[in-house]
Image 1 (tube, rainbow, N blue to C red):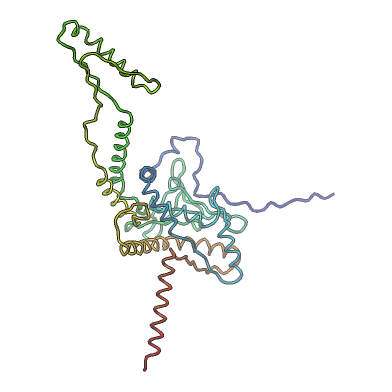
Image 2 (cartoon, rainbow, N blue to C red; image 1 turned 120 degrees about the vertical axis):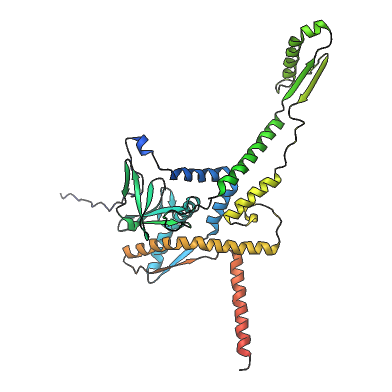
Length: 373
């Protein structure tokens, strides 16, 4: 008998931008000042729902895309774009780009990696910015380092990674978060909301001031403390939720709700002022965030056009990433690595405007052709 030996298939390479384990958590947990700013932006998205909704809507409105290539590789490339594993539970390049754009908008930088395996791209990975460090080696080149205990280590295969920066300052490898400038106004907004909640909590759970004024009788003044305690005890028993009883008092007793005379400030104007600053920074029309501010139809159309230009700018940041993924996949599978990224139209309104533009151009060309020369 001959024993048949099975040759194991090539396993996927380990993710090189993932954090390395360390037996010293205190040392390994040390990070520079940068992650503090990232935690601040995470807290902003959690504390102010408008900010989180705006970032998610920008990601959704960026839309889908298609990649065109030559030859028989088109069908296989489409299958790869739909089914490539992403991180630990995602699938498809669109899922990877959603996380990549979310990281880019929130922190100003995004880092991703192509994990090879089986002679092709086995998976895509969104690296956490807490696990990597960006260093500007030259004015035209940025290198990625993986943070480990005691220092940072340069990754071995930089051609498998990509990094994007959102509006980086000149001479810097670090981008600027879309949420930069919002902590101050967001802090005021959260403080107003917290005050509103405290006021309504006090309104729902009323506190009372029970005042007993003894008469001129000597015996009444001598036992004023005991009678005041007895009145307070009976009033507390009458106000309990689990009992229904009357409150009977003799003498000069005054009962008032604490804070009933204070005026609750109108929060509509300051809240709108803070929301206007937030919406202006995020670049979304107010009606997309559920803010029913007065606006005309023409103004809404202009806001939609401005939003289209914003989304086009984000698409220009994502196009090189898509092109790098697809060109490497085509090269590893023996195809011509030339490809073209074609984005979908952002809205149905864009389709209508483009159709009307083509119709008007065709009519103009027809009229010009009919004119006598």
